[in-house]
Image (cartoon, rainbow, N blue to C red; front, side, top):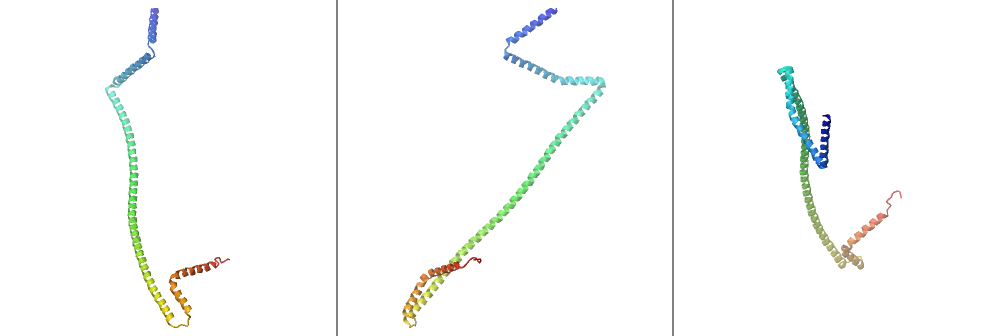
Length: 233
């Protein structure tokens, strides 16, 4: 019988070897995946059934050992323990959320203070800009008014200078005419040639007076330049 058993085992081994040889690498891969899937489904089914079986076994044990009241007390203790754990976790979560909320409130307070400071600064700059705009407008108005005033004053001074010029020119012409009249028609101790030179000088003086004044000023500056500038020389 032992010999027959060994023959059957050997035949099974041959069948397995034959199946392995007849199934290629792709077939072996698919077969392995199928086996793993079956094991996974079986384990999942066992996991679903494990919890009810565990609860039934636990109830039977504690009821047999401690009675129904003992089982009920044990269940209450487990529930209290789970409730305490849930309360601790809930408190931890609540504390974390409170800490986050407080941090966000502090951040909001900082942003709000910063916003108020920026708003106050904006109002201050806006008020200063309005005042500066008014001041600039007044300054421009004053400058334009002063420019117009200066323009009119210059225009009046120019007109007044023209009046003075024509008045002095008329007076000068009258004086020259009188000088010529008295020099030619009235006797004088000055020679006739000298009087002619003086008449020509008075007539040409308005035309060469500016040139002569410029030359005179130039000579004065030239003489002033000859004076020593350094007291140590």
